[in-house]
Length: 521
Image 1 (cartoon, rainbow, N blue to C red):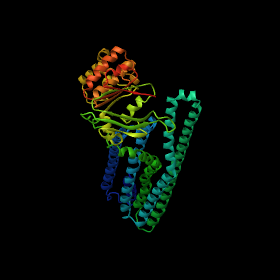
Image 2 (tube, rainbow, N blue to C red):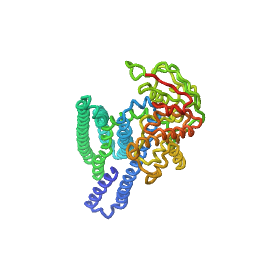
Image 3 (cartoon, rainbow, N blue to C red):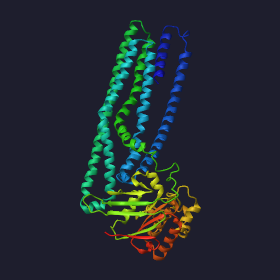
Image 4 (cartoon, one colour):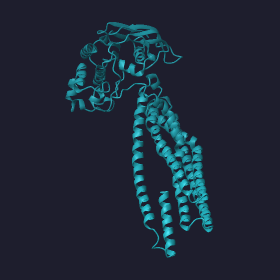
């Protein structure tokens, strides 16, 4: 663009002077006009290619970042993952990843273009004279200094905007999800005020950044106008001294006018630098963690070990808070491979907590748990996930087809395996009666199935995964006695040599156990 404007200005001035001098016929019109056509076509083509290539690369980069970030989150062990709020994860996966888009489009690319333009332009203008080159150099340095200063002024505001945006999202989600509890506890008004405070902080930071954008833009415009006037006066002096011709004077002025294009993109990137740096700092630990394990390239857990490991509890204690009584205290137990154990007890006796500790969802406050002779804390999350099939009291189903809900446990499972798993929990007849069978879609939270049917669909996942250790928390909840007995018998048969630990209130699960343990409150 700079070369095109400069050459066009030189050509118009040169042809005018040649015509006035009566030398029009002798003037070489072909070479400069061909250069103008070439530069015009090159500018159009390069602009199109730049948009096509850079935007495609940017979108691909964001897609890869999101996948890597999700893998990084998936490798976190459950206790670490539990510290994250859903809104915070959403912020990392959306706004923070989007902020990294600025890194390439508004920082790396504009800086590279600026350096290339500055070097090329200065080398070309040195052929005209040191004074002209020095004036352009002053313009470029001044523009760069303005952009850097704007970035320094707004860095805290950009970070404040990102932090306020996250706070608003977290508080708004909490307000929507827990508004009943907040209303009952009398905290609804305080939560509303907290969300409004975050919104005000975000608006103030946004206004500050907008003002900085306007001020820095005005400063660059003033700098460009000053440089244009200075270049005109300098070139006019050179022309009067006979060191340059009239066309070169026009070229120098127009090049100065166009040189501002190389500086303008730096301003926007500098204003976004604080937000981009904060996002990069937040995402870096998760992206570094993405190769630690958790999900395979196919999207599922690593292959399950063939032989069930020995589970051993050594003087385990667990309490939910330091000032609360322990749920479990001095608990010791060894579970041999292939054992079926029923853990019985009243509500609050620690049955679910026991299963959660084995699965790694919570960590004991004292003592230790070993699996296969290794402490659970030393086992990679990927290996732990592959070794354990866990059914919690809460049934998690997704708004998707029945087949895809089942393939959460086994992404590569074929239809025959899915039907076999459904038959094991006596849900195959129900699914066959639905329009589409395995392709029938469930609503949010498994809407479309009854509570007992949803429970059995979750059990079918355990059958599909076929892990060496099955942890089942109230697996027969919502089922009548006869159906519960049949399903439990099918599960025991399908488990083969797997270890099964069942937490239950009722004796129907205990009927299939090798050992029954009772936990007292």
